[in-house]
Amino acid sequence: MRRSQRIVAITKALVEQPYRVFQLREFAELFNSAKSTISEDIAIIKETLLELNNGRIETLHGVSGGVRYVPYVSSSELHRRVNNLAKKLSEPKRILPGGFIYLNDLVDSPVSLAEIGEIFAQKFSDKDPEYTVTVETSGIPIALMTARALNLPLVVVSRQSRLTEGPVLTMNYLSGSSRRLETMSLSRRALPPHAKVLIIDDFMKAGGTLRGLVELMDEFECEVVGKGVLIDTAEPKEKLIDGYLSLIRIDEIDEAKQKIVAKPADWIS
Image (cartoon, rainbow, N blue to C red; front, side, top):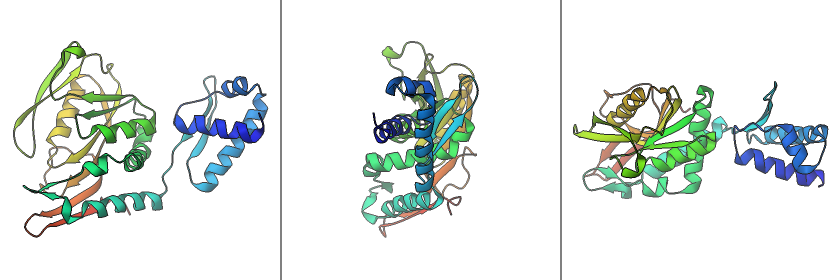
């Protein structure tokens, strides 16, 4: 292959599997080229991505060393993405009877989901999570794209146990908003003990579900290294969980005036 062809193929492999470490010999054998030649190809890719602010190529040394692609979202791009979502969320037509908000079009868009997943991945990658965890159902798309951006397995906690899951751990938790007793279940085979997990969900009001997930992870003897939610609400001020990161905060929902006030979270400048 010509160098231009190798560069396209190597870039595709790296970008499609972020954080996976590729050894130079893998590419050398694939393209029947010398390692030094592959190293020159990767240097060109690294320089180009850096110049375009489209992520970076990291070189890892040692016996298990190699190269890997790490996605990167610039501060200006992050600001643009979150502001765009907040603007869409502020549309009055989203208000449903009872003060609920229609979100399906946001979490069903592959483009939006990919952008959200990349943001969460960037914010939590330094915690070295080994699994991404969410609870069914509406949080699954966001958690899936976060897992995709981190190249991690996705674990979905069920609202009720299923026969196909084998032995399960089931626990009750108190919903923070409705103050009702809810149930969540997870197969005993889903997570190994002492795994590092990243919890991702789409919406949080009081934080009861998120706290329930944290307590469930404790039962699995897993370490929660991060908690991310797409949207949280200003009320109630006292949450049942702390230490989480949200992208958008809803300050007000006025059904009578058909008004929604949604803003980027305070940490986003």
